[in-house]
Image (cartoon, rainbow, N blue to C red; front, top):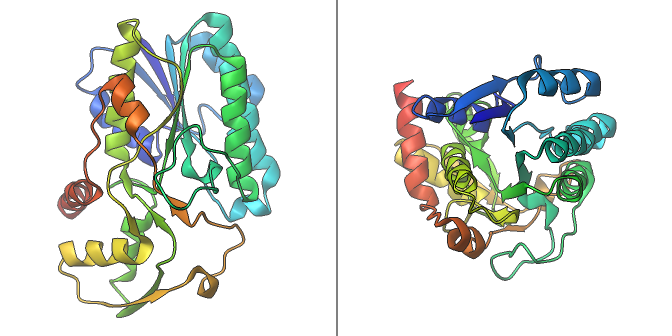
Length: 287
C-alpha cells in the first residue's frame, strides 16, 4: 500500500522513516515545505498527485504556549487541515490515522483516563486539537485517532533532550512535580501505528478514538531525575509546583491514559516508560 506521512521531520515522522525501511509498503514522507498544512491548495495538489491508500497525519502545531498568541496558525494546522485531509480520505475511501493529545481531556484526575471520558481542553493548542479530532471523525468514515502523552524521541526537540542539554552548563534545575502523566517514546507510537495498519489491511480495523502511551506514571520532576540517574549525571534538582513555573497555556495536572481499548482491539502491549527511556538514551549517546 501507498502510505503518505505528514510531519516527516518531527519526532514521530522521523521514527516512522526508520521503521519504514523494513516495510513492504510504499511510504511517502512529506515535511512542512512539501506539504504545508496552512496552504489548502498545495495540500489538495499533493494529495491528488500522490493518491495514497493511507494517510498518517503526524504533523501538528505543538508549540503549546506560542499557540496562545498565534491561534490562527494553530487552528489552520490542527483543525482546518485535518478536516481537509479527512474529507479527501472519505471521498477516496482511504484510511486516515490522526495523532492527537492527552491535552484534550483535562478533566479526570483520579484514575487512568478512558476514551469515553469528558473532554475539557484548556488553551488554544488543546482546543484546536479537539476540533481537529471532531473534524476527522465527522468527515472520514475510515479514521483512527490516537491520543498520546508526553512524547519524546532521539529526534527533534523534547523534554529528554532539553534536560540533557541544560545539564551541560547548569548544576541546579527546578522541575514541576504536580503534573502527572506518562512519558511516551515516539518510536513506540510509530510501531503502534504500523500494527494498526496491518489490522486495516486485513480488513479487521475498528475505527474510532484510542489512547496510546507507554505504561506506568510519573511527574516531570521524577522524569528528569530518572534521565539523570540513567545517564549518571550529577545535578541538583528541586521539585516545584506549577504555580512557581507559570506558562501562557495551562497544562493538564493528570495525563495518565487508560490503554484497555487499544490493547483489546489491536493486541498492542505497551512497554513501561522507563524501559523505553533507556533505549532512547542509548540511541542519543551513540548518535
